[in-house]
Length: 224
Image (tube, rainbow, N blue to C red; front, side, top):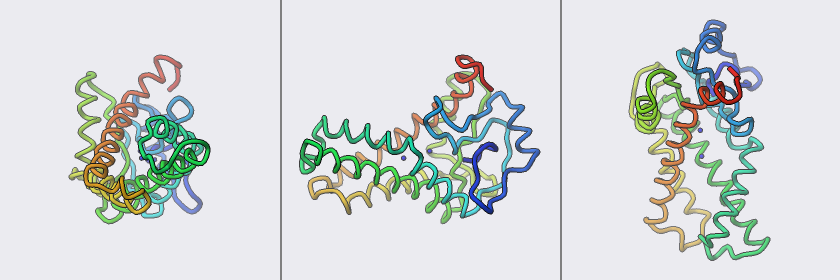
């Protein structure tokens, strides 16, 4: 539907990470940029070996807002709408420009609802940290396993490990809420479950991308 990096822009009135945390991130080999490929927002990724204070309620909602209304979100919604229309996944939407418009706003709504539930609303209720903490060390399989495991395991605001209810329950709630604005044919248990599992799978892919992007960024683009 994917802050915490010391370089992340902060909303007015929100304190930035401590200087020691920023220094730790800058010295780490797993330094996370604000964007992947200069386009995809990477605000939720925390550089390896970095310790940050917990996000406040305001910061969590700001994170969801950044991810939901970043310019790339409008591009992604357009791509998803195009794929959906090409596959005729929701026949009630039709074809042509009008049909594409229906696919578009539904795709955009899906993104925003998912972001606010998994990055702000559920984390606020469960006191979980919605950020992705990069491992940054070890072999490919260890780091890949770690990235995928973050779908089930996350940190609380106090730094303890816990079940990732933000991911599991948040995406489930998002899939359920989408039934309110989709046609009746898409409101089945099967369709809702597919949306839920698809979003979790996509988040797993994005976790892997976040984990290895600092390495790719340095090796290909010679950036730290």
